Image 1 (cartoon, rainbow, N blue to C red):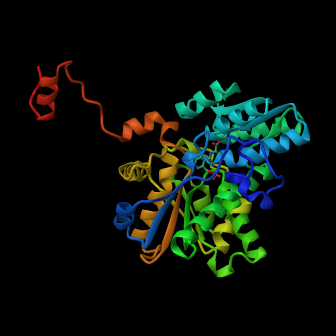
Image 2: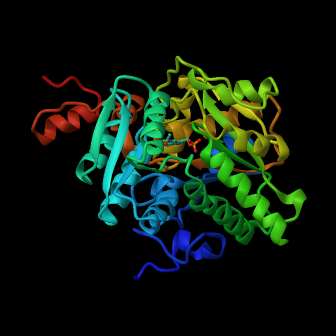
Image 3: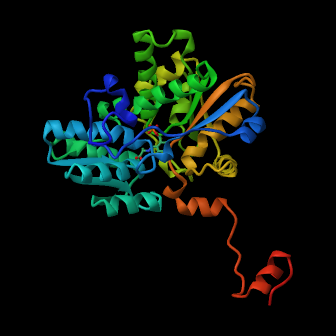
Length: 365
Ligand code: F0G
């Protein structure tokens, strides 16, 4: 296939196969955002925009590997629970692989763009009267009864693909700056990415490609209304305590029971990172801050920038640091949130002179 060896698959040496079901994924931009860098006050701020993947989120990196594994295993049906992006990615890669796909979504809590993707790619969409964590409980039951192949980030092959985010960041930052970033700040839901990045760093250290002292500090950001990881870091817990009631405008990370916490918590601790919770208001502000730099992201993604700002203000992040913020999903995933955060359209008459009057601030009758 034309896409062989591109994006995620450029790192096939670190993956379980030479190639996968590819659209292709990876090779996302590492944006400069000079105004935001000055405003927040760090030495370097770069934005790794994972919203630029084929289905608009980092989930594609996991699915290109995970769905390939499903083909090898020879399963009949793929399934996932999702706050939206996993379902969009699985639906596309499942369609590409010609496999039946089932997605379980928390009813009324998934952004419109994501449901539309799953729908058009032909998945069966089950809307569960519960939150993401209950959807995942059900999918795990289905998988253990042999009814479906689970492609949530509990599936370790998903995380193999997502390691490539770490490889790309380190490689690209080094090319540009001649050193590795001090810190990577990322939004945390199920903590799959945090676990995947930590694994990527450990593999690089073990292979001798990265000195132990050069491993970036993994810094997780959650919404205040769904912050069990932050609670676990602050209280030095070995695992998270399940939050039954979660709420945030950043629906992608509206998760109370991060299943990858046992893998992700050591990643945060052993790299010298931290975890921080941010309010929905700060998330919306950060979404606007990024938009002003031309970078369009969904609310959960903006949490990374909101978290960095908070840690910079508290002094936990030093002004001399080189920081990469991960933005995990595209603005168009959640058009409603984008429209609410932005300016309202102004109705004008169908007439050029009146349009000019309107622009000049005159009342138009
Ligand atoms: N950002 C976005 C846009 C996401 O969709 C997710 C997770 C995360 C961050 C958190 O990543 O789980 O690796 O800590 N979305 C999952 C889903 C849960 O179903 O789409 P994580």
